[in-house]
Amino acid sequence: MKRFLNIFGRLLVLAIFLGAAWLLYARLKQYTCQQILDAVSGIAWWHIAAALLLTVLNYVVLVGYDWFAVRWVIGDRFPLRKIATASFCGYAFSYNFGATLFGTSIRYRFYSVWGIPLLKILELLVILGLTFWFGVFTLAGLVFVATPFSIPERIENVQMPFTHTFWIGVILLVIAAGYVLLSFVCRKRLRLFGWEVPVPPPKLTLYQIVIACGDLLVAAAVLHSLLPPTEGGYVRILGIFMLAFVVAVLTHVPGGYGVFDVLVMNFMPQDQGPAVFAGLLVFRLIYYWIPLLIAACMLGYHELTLSKEDEIADTPAAGG
Picture 1: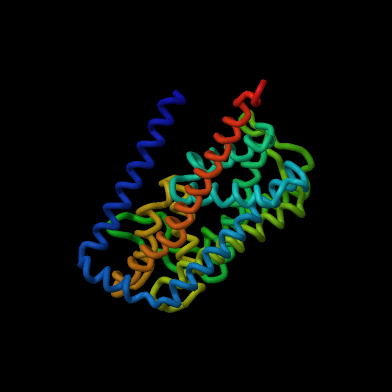
Picture 2 (picture 1 turned 120 degrees about the horizontal axis):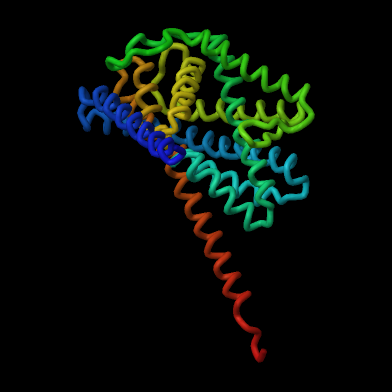
């Protein structure tokens, strides 16, 4: 049964990806490649520079996720350099290929080599997941309630279950508030489906939510700096970003490829199509692909260093 569910889940993710890719193609087929290339070259260099600086800031903020989690699970003395390395590589890979397959395994690789017990690593990963999701729920809920916007009843002939973001925001805020309340009233681990889930103390919970909201605010600013001007400015882009981001993560499509892009394009003015797609391409390059390349080099260097250390350890002492 478990094997069947795993296969079904993978096929479902593949079907969602193919469906999103088809919807994106249906939206883009009215434009020529030259129009899109002209739109890419039309992005001002200072907008690209701003996106690069904001991306660096965002990945620095992301270290806060791991830092607070490590402080609570492992202790105060764990080196910040190691935390930053695991955080950057973990997020760079998970953003492109999915947290389940790559983000968790890369963090496990780093922390296990550094001598952290398996149970501590699992607890750390749970805390990181809680931080991310309840930060998403809090910020998305606030944005959807404070500045609600309509969702088209149909997107490329697909019927939408909601036509407005307000009540989605209310539901998300209720879930986030429940998590905060739980941290105040619960002083022991929860047992869910045979797993013991740690409940962080209130102070750590609030820090988690602040860090997560800061991460998402900066990530939306990266996208905003690359998209054409639109009515509502950054607040409008933040709402679109949060909706597209939440849906993309829930579908489990690695990197949200196709899903995130088609949603953003459908919420932006249709006459800005080439410019919007150009902005999304450059956003992928700056926020996803360049960090992935750097993280791959860091991971490769880390593994090479370990191999050399193992070779030295296995080499008999001279004259021995």
